[in-house]
Length: 370
Image 1 (tube, one colour):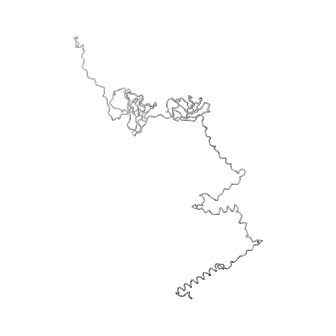
Image 2 (cartoon, rainbow, N blue to C red; image 1 turned 135 degrees about the vertical axis):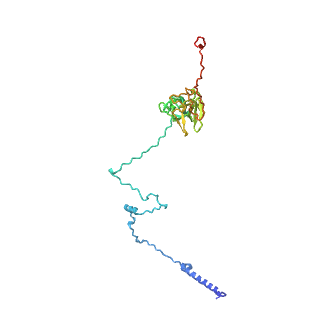
């Protein structure tokens, strides 16, 4: 054959292998797809429809498969089935909550077996808003006073005042003067503000039908001295007596005489061995400061007894009746340290000098009496 001319044995083997492989492929295709692949006829299937269908046998149905379990069977299943509870699982129920527990109402009771009925809850109605008062108080003048002040005049400013309205000071009616529908005045007695604290101001008619809102007047305590009375120096006939005061937080005392102004506000009106009286130069209030003795530790306490240097009798004597003293023993003076030297007057008792013997003028006559 000319097919293999000029071919080496190797090339001839390759051509033979390719031809055999092609034949095998054609055989596989014929076996797989049948004769239709190579132009053969396609097999057809004829379906015959019957006019009267034949009854086929149905499977047997068990009626127990559709029967609901009874209550006892459900309770038994709930009590015997273990609960697989895993807290780390997102489908797990909340801790302490049994998802299989259901509320079952108790059976109805009869007669005495029924418990006492629970009373219905008390319904508290919301408070009704207070109506707007027909009279309005805007403000009062003055808005604050000092306790212990004298009688003062108070002005009430507002709206819708009437001539028959009165001003009430802590529920006490005041003698009111009607000025206009926006202003009323009244005098407040001194005994109404004797003590400190807030006071209620109200405007109301005599029949009580028209009233106003409430306004507070502040009655505050007057300013008190911020120092203590620690001692004094008493002089003859109480002339130019000196009082010693000690301010809070200071160690050096202050010395003041009568009519001096202490701390720029309180005038010294009286000095005694037990107390001092000071008057507020701005407000006119008087304050009494008892004598306070400062101890070695720095604390102070009132001393009911007489300080050193005063007579021990029941009545205070402002000066020594036996001056100059009959003894040279120095005594303590309040406010002056004992180590400061003081003048001690000498003893005034003098020894009488010897007088020369006086001759009797009658001895010089010549009567012979010699």
